[in-house]
Image 1 (spheres, rainbow, N blue to C red):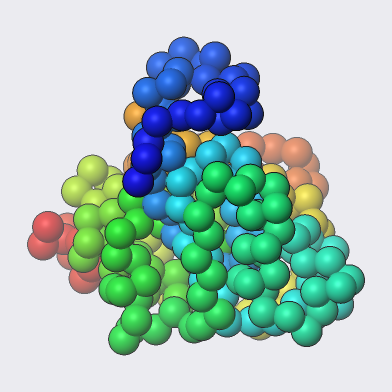
Image 2 (image 1 turned 90 degrees about the horizontal axis):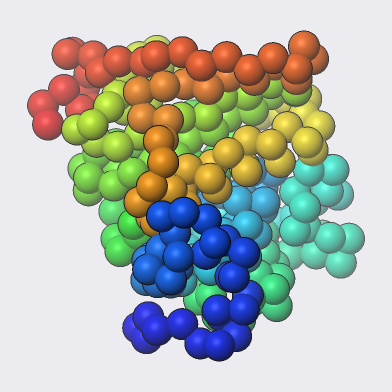
Length: 247
């Protein structure tokens, strides 16, 4: 991959390169990076949009579903014309239109035990934008196996949480949630909630790749939108964690 920055890219990314500890070197790191976005729904749409806008060199989008009318209050890259279309593929087309410098790989498939390792292969960071715990814990296990950072967020109604998992440096998702939460197939949500947490995930991803600032490793950031209240709580590795205690 050509990691030099063209005149067009220097202009496009000028304002973010003004950030201390970012500059041209940080932008080149983004151009070299691959981020896997697991899910292109309420979280995954804005995550992929802002990562593409920031100039991440390659995005891998994975989502088995097709857009439905009931998605459109929050899945901002699903438009009326996209109803019935594969989410990953419809989102990919819009991202290329936004930033043709970014390579987009779209996979309209389910993340399973027999393909998760291959899907994550080559990714520098994985974003958990899923809506079910089974897949989240599968991603967590494989990120620990491959020693890759995982940026997790989960939302419900006006509330949510976000954390960053870096194997060996902090707790994994199973450390934080030793008991699997109950799956809820359809739950209440306003579009602003996943939008808010998606932006926090993007900030974490960009800091991880560029290499500056503090991340949420070892911390769980919680937000209550009804009370407009943020809280940050420490989370620790568990010595008996079945996923990461042996690493």
